[in-house]
Image (cartoon, rainbow, N blue to C red; front, side, top):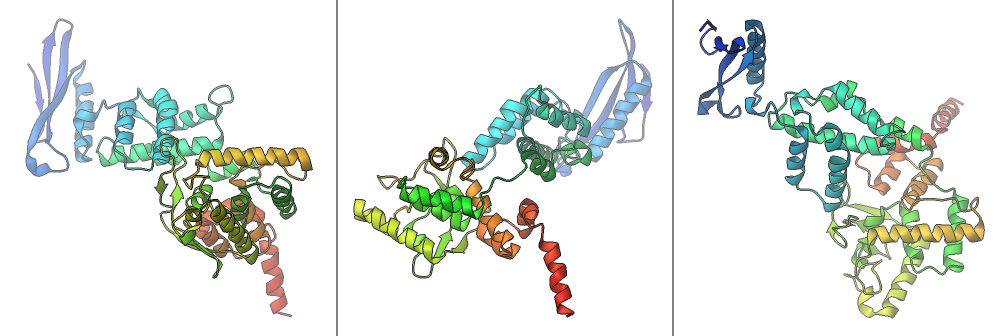
Length: 399
């Protein structure tokens, strides 16, 4: 048996004889627990190498892994089982769990699940995204692929924390996930009505269709609130004297979390001012609720509860909206009332305000965005005249 020894603690390679000829193995002493080196060392190794050079290269790699604090026994951990373990241990909202589960089970595991985490490269991840976008394959929208990319990146962030890999290759610029620009280019317009289109729909919905949900559509359009936020409102959150709405919570839109109340998307509450017309709409709505049952108009009652005063199903409300829009198109025409998702009322609110010159910060606060930069990224295209207006205002200051 031949041995090539290294300095103490630096490992060694050893030859041994098999029926197939001479083979080589390496051995190295590494910490039992990389996070607690004071717990002592243990020996690891691997054999079967045909040459001393191959064994030496493997030893160098094992040393580098140990120096980076990686766990040697996890070199063959596959992404699929790890992703499922990661998901099971997350403390997240039910709707978020459902989204992550779709990403993991339908896309990440089928494409990358059999690959060891340490073998996943930025190039392989980029190919994964392109496969998802392929018209002959999954044919997913850029926005959907972008969300899957966020999920994958979070999984690999956890793998870094667990010392399975030294760096997150999903954050490498060569991974090339779809950017916000790609999403906007693919989707084109965000989906928003003009003031004339919104007015036409609301008038038809109130006067002709006589919709019991008209106050909900009106509030969403006049405040830019998210649907779950509006459905979680209680009358105690609405000050009809001061003309304010306190947005503090939202309904869970997931299938499993029907009626469950959670925090807002950013985790922060906000106060939104409403105009006199919106106040009148809500006053009439509260009177109508009270005529059904006094408890439906009390402070702790839901503003937009169902006929039993219970939370409405968030997704069912979106279905109701689509039905109303189709009805309006049948009566008024698709040009007067183009197709629009319920979330489009939020985009309509923001777009109309920004086009009217309302400061971005004010619009951002009304929408409840995490920062002004989010508002700028999403709605920069609806402010094409902002630079020209700034130039003309500066010139006017100079006379």
